[in-house]
Length: 112
Image (cartoon, rainbow, N blue to C red; front, side, top):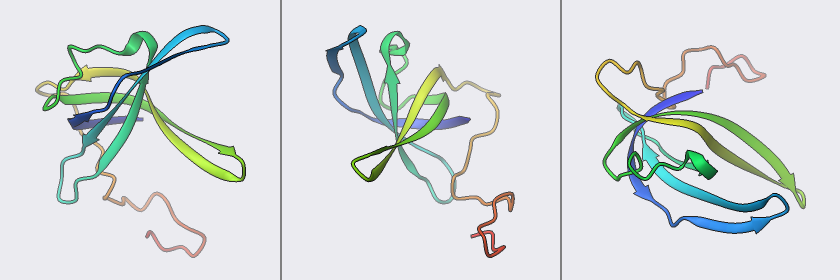
């Protein structure tokens, strides 16, 4: 999936040691454009963290995956970026999470 959004907050860098060695994780908050802007927390891991791109106020084009996992009977969802670029002129459309194109339908056939 891909999202174009403005970086509004950079959370503290997290680091640690695991079975595969040292790791680092950067969480940041972006806000989409449109009539109903949404805020999304996105995680970036390891060598993909580029401080030059992660500046508050930058418009970013983010390629990401969404993954959920269960732990002790509760479900947790992560938005993990695998590529981030600065959004430039002509960078393509942005995803508007508040827009429904009718492609998803719940069991009752209603698009909402």
